[in-house]
Image 1 (cartoon, rainbow, N blue to C red):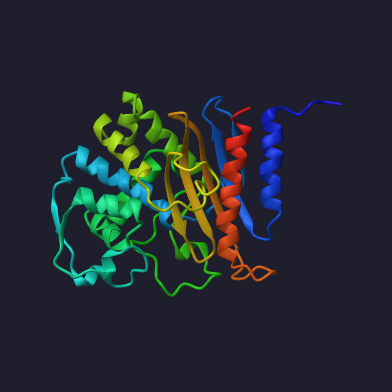
Image 2 (cartoon, one colour):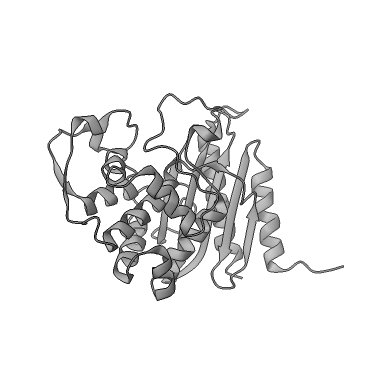
Length: 287
């Protein structure tokens, strides 16, 4: 009888976690010690929700590098920016506050604030961000809206929102990580070493600790961005261990029921599933 490799054992465990739920889970995980990648539906188009914001940040930093945008540019919070917004804290604040573009990017990433997302995205164009993704190899990522409509139904069509793939998000995170030391990757992303370091630190500053970090030891560094969609929850990030990048995981749940058979909210189990996938990688890749 053939002995399963450690990678095969982990792949089986990840499949078991996904198969235990009635909804769809797509993922791409990469062991950064060995370079091995395990995937499930990783090239299938899926709603991106706010994981799209990592590519928006990188498109904005490219524009900064080219001198078209300035991270110190002052931006005034106007009441109109809070319209059709369902995330973050700025929507509850008094209009007139002035912050920098740098701070708007921070708000967009660490609190997923969609007022801040509007501030950033309005300084680009939808076509520019979508084209940027394609230019760096994210061929399965399609930016369709500045902010998706609030009235979407849980069974909305894919073309009603921005979509991506788990493989694209793992690729993007790998590029951001590699760009810390590789001039060639910095050039591919269209940014400088300093801006790539800023991007990685901004991902590390993430405040929301559900999904990927939820079952990891307290204080584990995770550079990540999550998302809340009508069809599911998602999270993509780089997990660190002993001060070093350990693995990348991009996980997307879809077709999640509003309520599970036992009465548990569907979103609770979707976040828990991502947390279990991450923990299985944490334990398995350490072998």
